[in-house]
Image 1 (cartoon, rainbow, N blue to C red):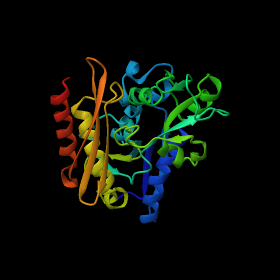
Image 2: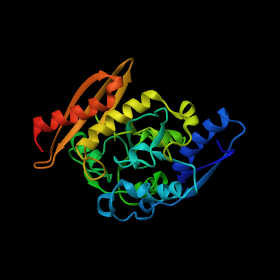
Image 3: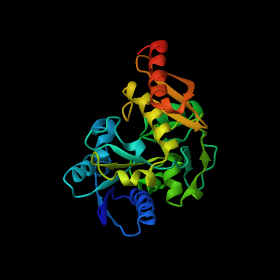
Length: 295
């Protein structure tokens, strides 16, 4: 293994903070290795005036990092797993899944605002979040909001929103959890597949020595179950399909949110089974809900 490892990261404060977590783990176990972080702005970071659906989906957050990895400009890349496309290139597999941070979504209120936001405007560009928020806050209105954590908090104060929704994991990693106004349970608001998990990507067959250091088997099983469910249903940024899995002992318990495009109704079901078959559990739940509720 090289004595210097370069890790590619998006240039936002959160992305760099998350990459530093992986950097610290590598350096703690391999003190002879120096880790450098190489930052870059992705297409998804540059275009903020349109929804992800309009500009091409989650792949726009990884495109530039994938190119850097293929060309050898970086040796690894680190992503929030929830921002990765469901189809991962065979030549750039996910090497490791980090230990999961808090998977929940949270509500951030504008300064001076309280839990009583009836009739107010909630900022979110996520169909998954909006769908579930409409049930929790039926009197509220919703408007798109994009950007990194700091950008969204600025827009919250400047653009007339009463609240916005973010992932607890990012705020906690940034040490900003004191601004959280309400935590949604994973039943109230089913998270995005992989939310709270960091994915470390590498070129196929390389850096296998890092597996034991970086990979969390529980996170890997949960992530594979969730992503399998979403992949079967062609979910992602353009569809509010969602899944959340918990690994308890030898069991994987997965909850799936199925959205029927024809009438925009949605349904939630659960299943459980051996964690060794987590991916199959996700696929099976998705197929069963598709048969039960129709396309």
